[in-house]
Length: 119
Length: 236
Image 1 (spheres, rainbow over the protein chains, first blue to last red):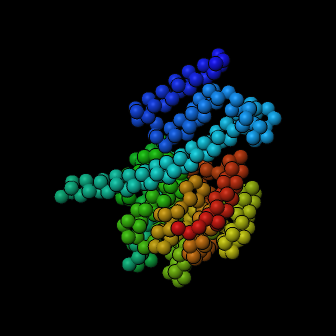
Image 2 (image 1 turned 180 degrees about the vertical axis):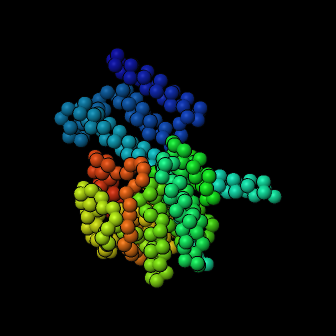
Image 3 (image 1 turned 30 degrees about the vertical axis):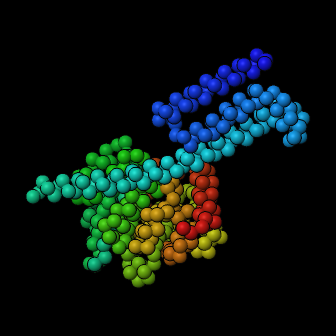
């Protein structure tokens, strides 16, 4: 086992541990963690299985194996960013509705208070 | 008796708000209309909230800044929950003279149009905007004609009277950032009738337009995209 393999495996283990900690503390929702776990799993897989990368690039017809890594990960990251935009759009919509309903509630409450005072 | 809600979306309009509210409160509408005024304070940083609280009106305070569309929508939500028959948006900056409201109401009485739009361009006189702005308005007029087949000249006018069907649709789907041109596509898609009435608008009393310089390019692009997507979106 080469030195770089050992380093990546250790880093991946630390990373997985950190994700687990975030989930248990309630700071990260499980659905977002899936992607991160999957990515680390792929990294771990390839750090054990050194010939895998060469094999994969041959299958996909990529001339230089590292290019496959870059292409694949940039694509994954783009998809994930899009997903995050969707998530934030959704929460923006929820916040809008919440704020509006809240404004109506506050108004109703004030009206009721004023009524109480006049009686 | 027809209940009408005036919706005034405000963002830092503390200077111009008193005049508009005074004018509105002294406005004599035809006898069968009963008017209430709702000021939607879109998380202003100035004294808008305090100024508004001095008048006998409904004050809707947004805790988070939602932008013009979200603010107006709050007013529509209030109108729907409290059983108003009509709702009219009047900008807080003094661009829409309150007495012009009567023209919209008269037109509504005659035609029962779902959405009556106060337009700057059908009549001579009043405040005309800059060349670039007119160009933009021309462009939206063209785009609207292509997408809806309607012929609304002043598609950026926010001075609009909604009936019950219009209010219900706006509560559900009013676009949030630059709602005026895009909502025209929405109305035509859901089969609501829109008509224009010439009104005279004045120059804003205070504050700046939310649409300036390079921001106007962003405005055009964003509105175009949202119009196209409202056009192809399925009805739900």
